[in-house]
Image (cartoon, rainbow, N blue to C red; front, side):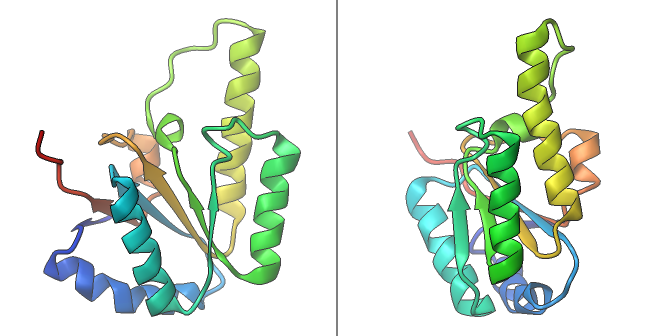
Amino acid sequence: MLIVEYLSKSYHRFLPDLAEHANLKSRFLITLNGPNSSELSAIIRDITRFTKKSVQVSTAISDKETNEGVGEIFQNAKISRDILLFSGADSLLEKRAGIRGSHDRDENFDLNDLQKNIANHNGIVILATEQKQILTSSMSSKVNVLIRFPVADK
């Protein structure tokens, strides 16, 4: 996994390389670790400019979208070759406690289905977290690039 600091030299070297990944028919997973809304907008502009691809932004994770809805998002991206960006992806990246009841099982099923769709997707998928996240070991092995954003001064 490549770790890049937002707006650093390595970030500016990474962007032109992203254009190559956008044209490959394989999954490429990027995690944006804690951007604010203006940083998220700026990185979407950067990605669009360098890849010449549209970025399809989804809140399916925070909205707890149905399996059919998630499948439709991936199907549309496959047809259009858009880049998928899931905002509010914190729950996908954090450690989950054991399943306690049927309600928990249903919530985890949606996340598991989303993870399967990401793993099988041929294109770029971006997971944006609202909080700074420490990736679980299972997620860190799946992420190709982690872009860290500076901590906002309070």
